[in-house]
Amino acid sequence: MNKFSARKYNAFTLIELLVVIGILAILLTIVLIAINPARQFAQSNNTRRRSDINTILNAIHQYSVDQRGNIVALNIPQEDADPLTNDAIEIMTEDAGTPGAEPDICALLVPTYVSALPVDPQVDGGAGMGVPISDCTVAYSTGYEVVRSNIANNIRITVRVMTPEAPETLIEITR
Image 1 (tube, rainbow, N blue to C red):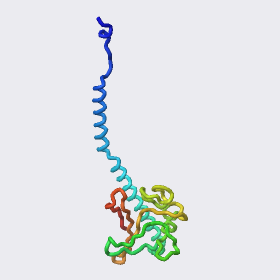
Image 2: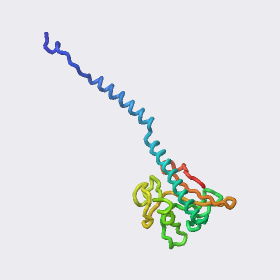
Image 3: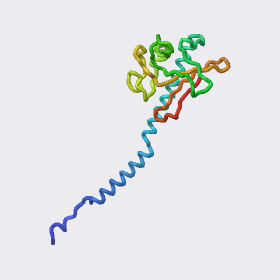
Image 4: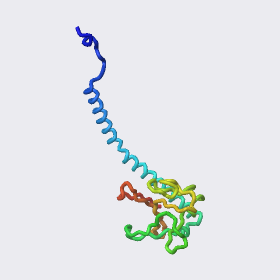
């Protein structure tokens, strides 16, 4: 009798290992498709954008209340009847001495009405990607736009943003 035939080996064969690895790869693929991290990040960013828009609108309205309803200093442009030709301004710095320069909303709102001006999560506002602006003396860009409209002598402020993940998606809130 052969001394090797009497011994019994307890090990997996190469075929068994390949089958298990294949099954695990299929399960991992199914889980990744179900979770879809890109969609989860996009939804997370959109939730943050809605929160940021609310924060900006609240700060503008608190400023308006302190100014007894006068928001002239904010210099928010009037919305046209055609939404495609609106003169909405992006909340960012420009040289205030230049004709047609956009207003420095940050200087009027921070820190009195909001501790830091929110920045779109996909925009480098000057301090880093999505980092809120607390120093209004440096150049900044929030990625958010603001416009006003007069409807029956009621001034409405709209803050909006186009989402970079889906450019056809517009998130806006009007108050």
